[in-house]
Image (cartoon, rainbow, N blue to C red):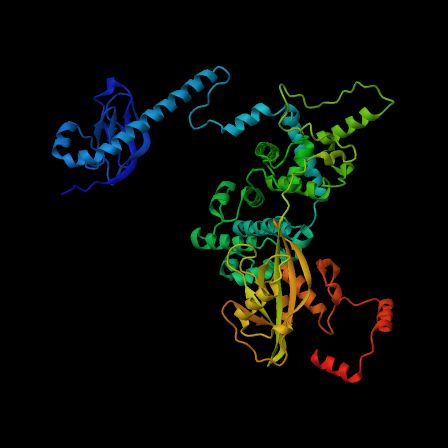
Length: 612
């Protein structure tokens, strides 16, 4: 009978010196071995048997056997156990050979690393264990010129004082600032900041104000939001874009209420680790504004301010530049007023240090701005009346190209001024897709007509929102009408194909997709109301405008309304186009058409009208 063998574990002990042959590994209660006698026995991770830990010597290695209880070292000679269990020995051959090969490979690799460390130890001292900096930070420190840093603590203090003094006088009166300032309860204050920071991601302040006000009126606390349904969240978020933000915000609220006792984590580190959808920036903003933690933040506005203040022209999205910006933000944040300082930096970027046409004359830190100094230097260099010798500080790296300066392939643009910073990152154009979509409307026995909406999947683009039935098609495909009709019938049953009309198209760009909707309409007249399958519903026009639908669907519906009698035409802002065959001709064109139109008998005209 073959003995039962435990599965592979992840522990092995390697004896590194012949002088320590008497040293026996002892297994602690936690499962990790230690030395019981003096000697050079090292513990490393590899594969071994799982299910218990014991000890056997294999060549120059100690194998931890399953039959040794925790805390007890086995000193019985291995040969006796192998004789007692020959089957065990047969099964152990392959794993032992694999362990020995792995040991030799790791020993060789370790020797190589030790030699490399020995050769480089003369250049810089090694850091203590556990405190070694990541490789990226070492490269960063070696490649950054002092020109892109602040000279000393005094310069940092001046920057803080000037920025905060300006903020105290010029800050905008925003609802989330008022709520956070007047809220005594820390959890409610953190929630107010959290909601505003999530809404402000990729969205303008003017757009967010109304959404934030309605959100806080409906769900003033985390507990209120945790009890809400996803449908309610999507409905209020509709039109704000990036719809996953609302879903993740509610998921975070439920986690705080159900798992964290209703208390929001107090530090940036725990906020980022414990709450879904909370990244480094959002965690820093909540921690500094709500809890007073001295931690810096970096968003798009702060990136622009720091890149100009320290003349950083390299790609701001690169790892090296991003690390430097976070380092500068942490250095600058005021420990006495971290929340106000972070908001002041963002306020400066939003109102003064703008992407185009920045208001440098109103900037409180203009005298510390290296981008402004660069503008003055370039103006002096182009002046014909001044000598060529200029006493203006500039970047002078010790060797090679500075990693934070703009590459030589991108020369200074005199017309841009400080807007030469930051460097515009090259963006991949959004992929183009095409969809055929239909507004299906039917009469309703209780009053107004209803339109059909179906719900999108719970993951992916526009997850959980409602839309008109649609199908993805090839832009120049000839079968999109047939494919769309099949999709409609899968939701509403048999439909009159002859009434399906193409009305126009809508182009809507998401963050990474440029989607063209070919808009169709199908109005049922005198038809028996069809059943409503799961995942679909019929809404009145008024209900549609308050439902959880995307902006793109509202554009599609405007095209449909523009083709119906007694409704307003679609707006130009909705990026819609109507086929030329359906556009109303100008008065002059109508006169020409009536002149050249052939005469149609009255009876035939009536028949044509009836057919329509």
